[in-house]
Image (tube, helix red, strand yellow):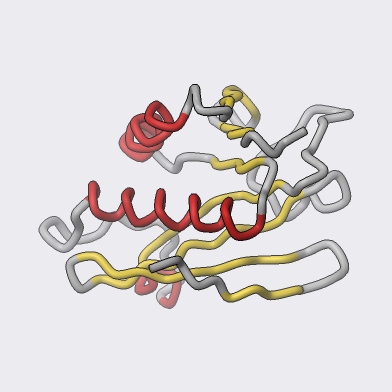
Length: 154
């Protein structure tokens, strides 16, 4: 079953696509925020001058427990035993691939919150690279930003 996205237009340049999923009874929300040369302020990444964005769209990926969002406690670690990291990342991967297939996006960006999440993202990406996807690493802040360019990037 394909992921269903709630599409919101906040202004001429600000758009979000959100989806939710559950793992071990815990609800998560995945948010894809559109970023472009005209809307870099909605991103957690800092882009160099004259950065080239895909004409097919650039979306920043973030996800969190709904409880963290409601309680204004962004990215707080879940209680041990209430999370299955592999199942969560598979759900995130499925949602991103569904988004790519539905919206034909050119690139996705993300900023892992911690080393554990970065390692999980890297394992996910290692399975996709070489199939027309390329990865750029080292965007600011602190050189932790990633860009995944899809086969539809150019």
